[in-house]
Amino acid sequence: MKLEVLGVEKVFSGRSGENRALTPISFEVGSGEFVSIIGPSGCGKSTVLNIVAGLDNASAGKVILDGREVHGPSSDRGMVFQHYTLFPWLNVLDNVCFGQRLKAQKRSKDATFIQTQRATNLLNLMGLKDFHKSFPRELSGGMKQRVAIARALLNSPRVLLMDEPFGSLDAQTREEMQVLLCFLSQHEKSTILFVTHDVEEAIFLSTRIIVISARPGRILAQIQVPFPTERGLDIKLSIEFLKLKARIVHMLHQETVLNKDALLKNLLSQETPGMPASI
Ligand SMILES: Nc1ncnc2c1ncn2[C@@H]1O[C@H](COP(=O)(O)OP(=O)(O)OP(=O)(O)O)[C@@H](O)[C@H]1O
Ligand SMILES: [Mg+2]
Image (cartoon, rainbow, N blue to C red; front, side, top):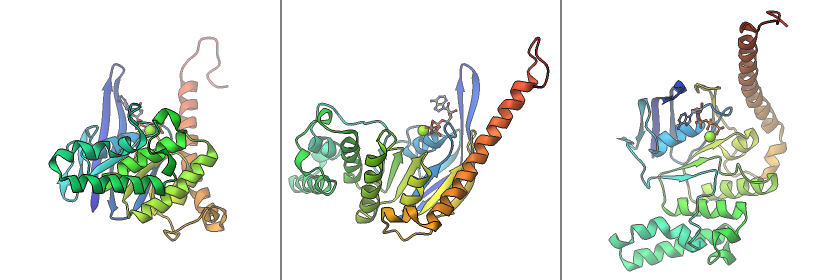
């Protein structure tokens, strides 16, 4: 599996003119990699992911998956969003099997049975053994996201795209989900492109981190994470982890500081009647 993002740019046109969200960005994701994209709010992280998912078009550049250009959504790219996207009228197992059942007409009964078994196993693995028949309204936020991840994994996508999937969770549940995702990604040998604001989360989960600048987004750095793929929460306390965290936080801080400076310059350059030119 090879995902190539080649010179992808995005300019949104709206009532207030053109909004350049991404300058040309290029990167690759290979089989079994867990790549996180991190950057300030509004830098274009979701835009990149939506373009890779085929939910939005690039203004220039292209996305290639295993040699074929991406032109729209497909089950070879599973997506998990920040906000819960389960069908409220379906129970947990039916939510997970939904995509597979759409394909079921083309399949034998045996294949459908095997998929249902796999869904059951995935849900059990994710600590949802007693909740197969529950409806989304009966689940906590973390449980709903586990169902959404199981649904995405069941389709065996070539690459799993995750846009701040733990963004709405409390700190403790978020950490539990990180451990679960770390385990699952190895168990399922998944390839994942993951968006987050959280530097710790990015380091803990990833094999590589792509740091993006403030809008319009461009790649500031690609950092290989120097930890074994099998990790426990204890690595978060190691010196190497803290040093890497400091390096990335510093990079992101520079982006924010630069923006604040530009903002201040802009404010001061605007003449306000009755105000001195400099404060
Ligand atoms: N559909 C749209 N129409 C117009 N502008 C858009 C649209 N979607 C995103 N943008 C703009 O593109 C830029 C990047 O947005 P995007 O949602 O990709 O940022 P992000 O990095 O995901 O931010 P956050 O971390 O807050 O989720 C922003 O300036 C945003 O206003
Ligand atoms: Mg976003």
